[in-house]
Image 1 (cartoon, rainbow, N blue to C red):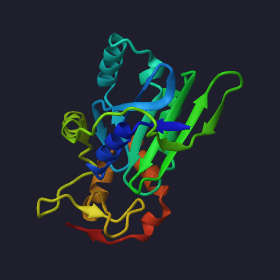
Image 2 (image 1 turned 90 degrees about the vertical axis):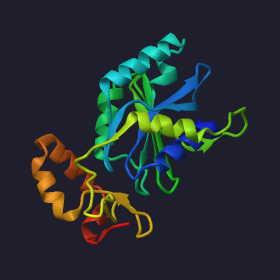
Image 3 (image 1 turned 45 degrees about the vertical axis):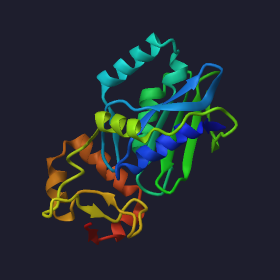
Length: 233
C-alpha cells in the first residue's frame, strides 16, 4: 500500500487544484518506511494539460541537496508523483515511457497519479529476480503525527518551480486563457488548452517528436474527438 501523511496529501491536492495542467514531484519518505510519503518535493518543471517535464539541472540540484541532508536515493528519488487535470488517473503512453526511461534502471520505483476527482493510481515496479510490477492501493494514513497545512509556502513553491508550456496555453482575445471541454471534464470543470482556431497553427510549429507525443495523448481520451465546444470564462 502507498500511504500519504495527511500533510503530504493536502499539499498534493492543493498543487493539483492550483492549475488546469499537470504538475509533478518526488515523494519523500523515511528510511524505515519507504512507501509512506511524508512530503512532496516540487522541482523546476514545464507543464501542460498532457505533460510534465522536469528540468535536468533542477533534478540534479535536488538530488545533491537531499544527499547533503543525509537521505539516500530510495528516500527521495524512487516515487514519482503527478496529477492529471481530468478524471482519469490511469497512466498515459507518455507516462509509461517516462517511467520506463527514467526509473527503469532503479531496483524499485513507484509511479503515482492523482486525478481531478480524487481518484488515484499507483504501481510499484521492481527489478529483483525476474522483475515485475504490482498495483498499489493508495490511502491517507491518519495514524501518525503530522504537521499543519501551509498553503502559503506550497503556493510559493509552485510559483517558483512550475512553468506553463506556452504551446499548450494561449490567451484568448479577452486576455483570459481559452478552455476546452476535454480529458474527462464536464462543463463546470474545464481545463486550459489551445484555442481551436489556433490549434492547427500551433501543431504545425511543433517538432516531429512533440507533435507525435501530443497526438498520442489526445488519442487516449476517445471522447475528446466528440467535443467541439470551446468554453471561455
